Length: 124
Image (tube, rainbow, N blue to C red; front, side):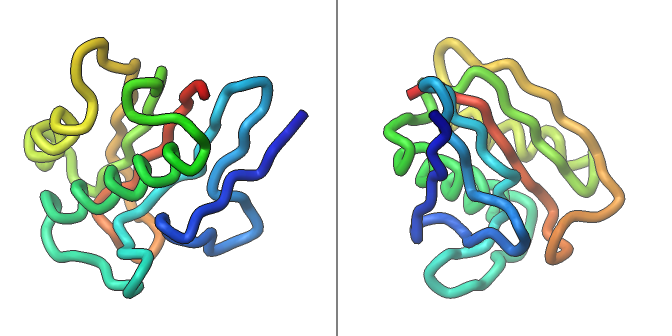
């Protein structure tokens, strides 16, 4: 059975997609960008954007009765691979212990011209 996951504590979908889907105890999130869901503002700088994006992802996972410790795979899209080390520092605050598998790719452009977007697969 497929369940749509939605929370006001993460940015709303800006297109015809769901924030996340749960099926058979697995949660698949859409890409989460660093928009403050309360104000719609995007922080400046890659560190602040990484904090906001990953924080938004954690809120989405919690709405799905999961959390960072249950993430098995992330994909991180970044605007500039030169920011990789800075993003890793922020990422390591949220994902500890048995780290999830991860892909990180540099992309030409992200929605709303943000510097980072992250998606995850987790279990409930």
